[in-house]
Amino acid sequence: EALAKEVIATLETKESHFAPIYPDELSLKDKITTVAKEIYGADGVQFAGSALKQLDKIEEMGFGKLPV
Image (cartoon, rainbow, N blue to C red; front, side, top):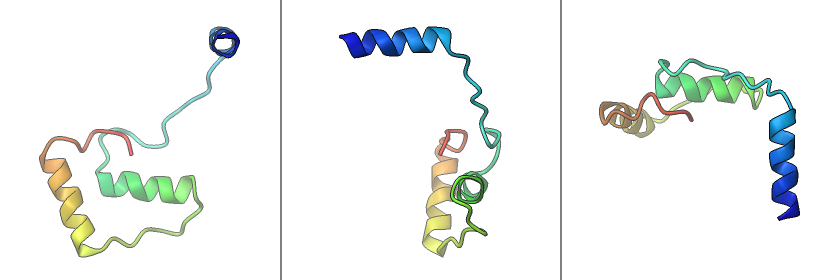
């Protein structure tokens, strides 16, 4: 309980500087590539053909705007 109170107090008094690193409108492939480059320092991402098909299907199902 003490930890929970401390977390709440911190959240109420600390200013957040969070900013997403990509817009929601990007494709899932572009979101993954952005995370790989910006967070992990990758030069790029190579997607297998099956992975690209799965990403396309996920986007067709309406889940493309979700964060990765």
